[in-house]
Amino acid sequence: MNWKDFRLKRQLRQIEKDANDDLYLIREAGPHYYSNSELYALLERLNSEEGEALRLNYRLFVLLASLTIWIAGFFLFEAFNVHWGANICFTLLVAKFLIFSVGIVYIHRRYRHFRFSSRLRMIIQQELERRRKDASIS
Image 1 (cartoon, rainbow, N blue to C red):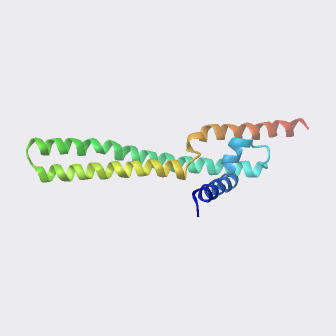
Image 2: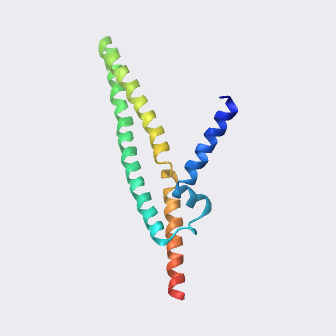
Image 3: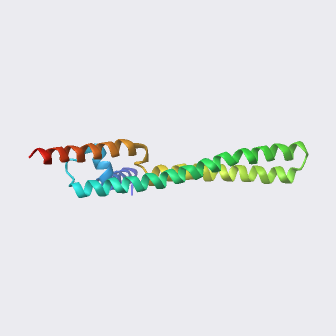
């Protein structure tokens, strides 16, 4: 397989993934093609994904805040010439930073609508409100 075939297959997989993602389609094309029940289900899915992403973000924030403890421990151990303690603190510092980095990448890949959740919620709610007004008029 050459490089062009690999890129083409990767692009086709991405297009298929985007086409199967209703929240992505709402963001790109609008909510006009969905029924009310589908919009309510998507709103519920968006709320649950946002809650999960916020919980993970909070855990990563706590992990990032704990890095200061390991930095302080490293400097204290170095100040008192306890090299084995400094090595442990430095190893834990690097490991936690790597875990934090992987966690951020995971959140952005797994919950890729998290950044747009407020905009998506607004789009869906405006469409549902418009439909409610149209139904009350006729």
